[in-house]
Amino acid sequence: MNKFENYCTKFVQSIGSKEGAVSPAVVSSASFSYGSPETAEGIFNGSVKKPLYSRMGNPTTAKLESIIAEMDGGIGAVATSSGMGATTLAVMSLVSQGDEIISIGGLFGGTYSLFDETLSRFGIKTHFFDVDEFENIENTINDNTKIIFLESVGNPNMRLPDIEKIANIAKEKNIALIVDNTITPLSVSPLALGADITVYSTTKIISGNSSALGGCVVFRAINENDDKFKTKRYAFLAKFIKGAGKMALIPNAKKRALRDFGMSANAHASYQTMLGLETLALRLPRIVKNVEIIALELSKNGLHVNHPCLESHPHHTRYKEDFQYGCGTLLTIDMQTKERAYDFLRKTKLATITANIGDSRTLALHMASTIYSDFDEDTRKFLGITDGLIRISIGLENPQEIIEDFLKAAK
Ligand SMILES: *Cc1c(COP(=O)(O)O)cnc(C)c1O
View 1 (tube, rainbow, N blue to C red):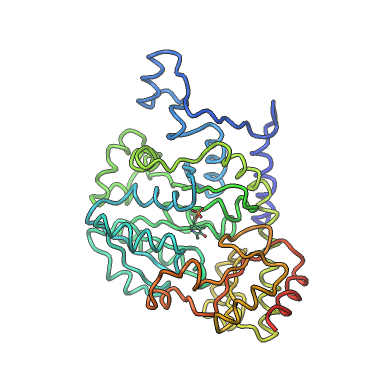
View 2 (cartoon, rainbow, N blue to C red):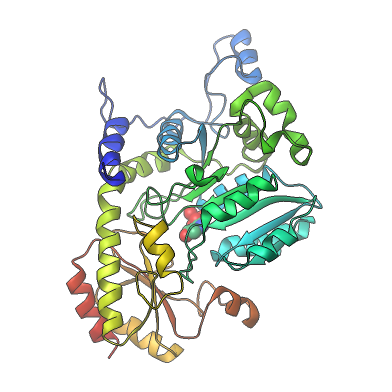
């Protein structure tokens, strides 16, 4: 069975309850009464599995976490207040002062500035590489390297990584691989390809309708025998492995990040996210098909479209072989100059001008004047941000109507 078809059943069946309220219950309480001092003690030492306090976990959020964990084949997940919260949680649970991160691929603006500007203030250094710089990546790994970080699709440069090959480097060198899979949930399964942790902004295609900000981090199980997380590099994990066994990455992340930084999800957002998730497997294949139809047609009509479904794209073969379920909702159009890009955005009647992506509606944004406006020229060049670049996130509309609208707007 096609992966999307399979998940159509799974999502609706696991989100709706067979007994009592069908729609998930929203438990908005910030705190939970323990009833007795013994139960309180048990909850705090982990022997009693009941809610402690909503910063550390919430029943509505827990339902979302278990569904997303299953979607990715993880042992568990932690939902967060935003996608940046998810990246911060995953990263901060593994690094301390003096550590190094290797970041591969065209990077989401917030993640780039987290690594380049914010973490560097705390003595954590990040090395940035393009997706195919395998030799440089291997040569940069040293005793302080704690994380290889990768985006499943370069946003907005549309370059595709060889995730399996990079996962093999991470495996061989015993370094944690974190994949930001925001753009390709269901389409790409990072944990199955050898990643250790997946992060999502659920704000995007998982919710799909701009109704809730959120994020989620999925963790793999610690192996019973050899495991990269049992090596000296991750010595700080030993006590969690002793206490929680194969679940260890979750209490570590909760203690190291959720408790102290407080990027916790709230129940209402988790509920809204589940409503979106319910139809993800139905929406995504439609959008992926739309993206291909639109990219081909606009390109045929002389627009400078960047998408790996086009034969001219350097990762076209990789797209055909490794991304059989597509690479999400994005494509870019280079209008060559800022003036022409603005003209296009003024004329399009269907695209909504916003910084979001992965919506049911088609969205568009000029990159250099917005998300990347405070980045210097070299960084923009590295991230593929040209003066006329417009990022488009295709929605559920009839693709012919989008094509007509865009061709008129580009005149
Ligand atoms: C949007 C996005 C994020 C950040 O998510 P927020 O929910 O906006 O905090 C991270 N990574 C990628 C690839 C994104 O598109």
